[in-house]
Length: 191
Image (cartoon, rainbow, N blue to C red; front, side):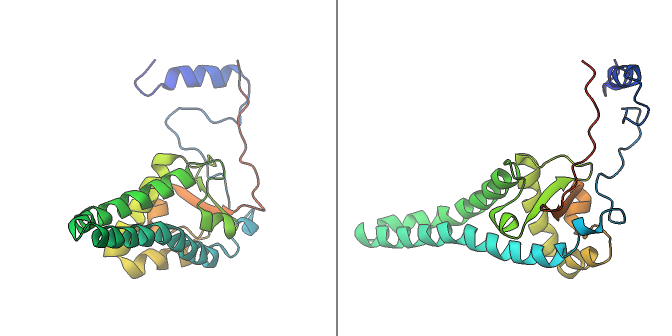
């Protein structure tokens, strides 16, 4: 067995007789969601992503604002000593946002609250659902790219069939309409 596990995967898949199945022979899997075969998966995704983002900002902001109000009132009650907690409020807000995106995208619906409201779902380019690390990385990479390349990040989504933004290309993700999702073809297990 090689270091990438190629020989075991090749043996299992070739023994099944399924010539159309993907093998770990160094080649890449094809995209699970083709914008030309299934344009309904990507219809209106760019606009709905904007509204999903705004909804998610509200969901993230409410606990943060409540936390700041609590710290302010706690500072009044403790005669100013509680205001020392303000130094931890900003890092806690960042951690909260990362955990929110990671847990939401890593959850069973593979979508944040805003994405669920707008009937969107994040998938990997080969059709697998999202997971915690992917969701957290997706959020961090979005904020990093939007900070440095603000107009470019959004413009990229207007000029490709899958409406992927710059951080989607880097991470290998795609956002699709959940209600019209066609299940990605899965290979049969041979055990």
